[in-house]
Length: 321
Image 1 (cartoon, rainbow, N blue to C red):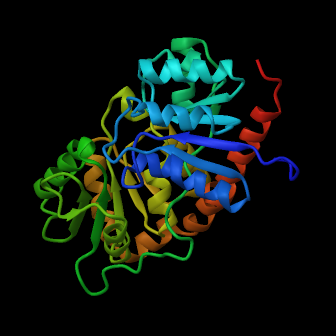
Image 2: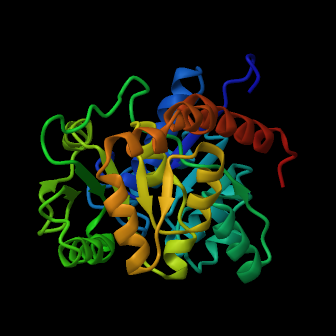
């Protein structure tokens, strides 16, 4: 963006910093833009996450009088949000819809630009709506100086991190571990907002537990909703220096080809073989290799943040409708 022009960017987010999607796709990029001297402002970030627009009359007044050049809707797409996006366009304000899940909404037509977080999601949007999107991967949140140290003299410890919506996957793997008789040979720490999780999710708990982990588990459901997801969780584990046992989605396969550090398992037999191997420290060390450095080169905030700067610069440079 031009040094002489300080465009004002507004963010309408699904939730606040506690909500992973709003933090990863909103606040973290907002913070990066601020670090580059760009006038980025959070317009809305409700305490209770909601894909419906949480706007009152006063909020609308602040937005329309705030001299914004571009407004980003982060997975906010109800009828009120669509109407707001169209009204902003009439005022020659550029609009962006940021999408990370399967959502069928007229918001895709109502904005100037759609950004998605995986190639599979981009393909789905094009098939469903005939709209070409821009793909910007999720940036890594983990501090660049963080590395897992392992469980030491204790049992090899695996870690799983996910929302309660994804609990089915890890529940399935935990049952397999018990059925294989491996529950006496390893520990698995689950970090989630699910009632049955061993540890409640927080950024502090994630870092504390992962520092003492030896490997990570990344099962996924066999659904289209899962297949369009980004590489975020895989990148997180690799950036910590943790080898990963994962199930396949396109984004995970694409990233693993560039970084290594991953063993994919599908059938029960493949899971058993992978889990038995991961008990060996030498195997773990050889598997993870230099994946942490490689994933940083691809997905560090310094890399992804510049993608956003370039994208927003291009949008602002386009002739207004």
